[in-house]
Length: 69
Image (cartoon, rainbow, N blue to C red; front, side):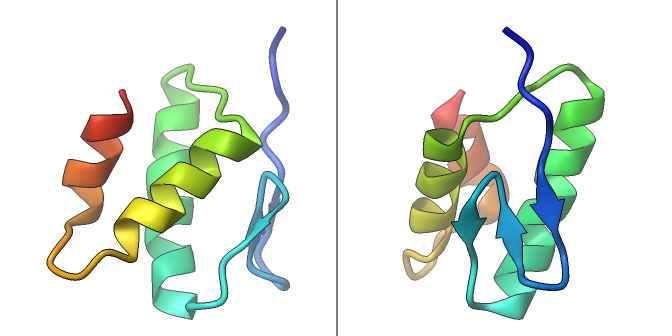
């Protein structure tokens, strides 16, 4: 089943996951949108994992993203 990508930039929500930090939201949104174009259809759980791992100190978004996949 193909999931529709749901991004609400005004409320900083991706796939139902609210991201309070504006910079983190922008980073996650960029990564998700680019990978969605390549065929990735993220679930709410995957977005949550990406956000949680990205909030760990000294963690880069790219490294965390690669760990999920």
